[in-house]
Length: 139
Image: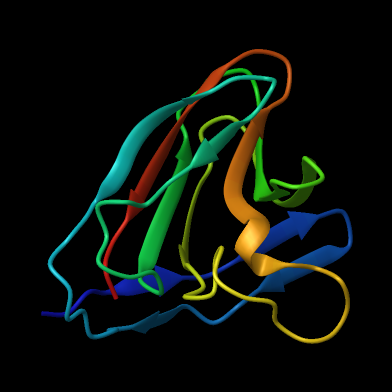
C-alpha cells in the first residue's frame, strides 16, 4: 500500500517573496490501522492523546484544528512532572501532515535527565475547547 504527501510553501509579504518548490513523495505503508484517534475534544486544561489502535508508531499523521476561532498547541507532556513541552501550534482551520516518531513515550533519546517513558503526546487549547482531528496511521 502507498500514500502520497504533497507540500509547498508560498509567502508574499511586503518585500518578502518566497516560494518553495512543490514536492511530493510516496511513502510505503505496510500497516493496516488508522485513522485514529479521530476527532478529539481538546480543553484549555489539555488532553493526553493515545494511539492505542495502532500496532506501532512511526506512521503518517494529519493534524487539523477544526475550530473557527481558537488555536491549539500540540507537544509532549511529562507525566511525572506534569510539564507540557509545546512543539506545534495550529491556528483555526489549519492542517498539517507529519510522521510521528516511533520513539513517542518509549525511551530517552540523547543525553540528559529527560525520561521518554514518562511522556505522552499532549494537546492544549488556548481560549476555549477545540476539536482537533488527529488521523494517525500504522507505518
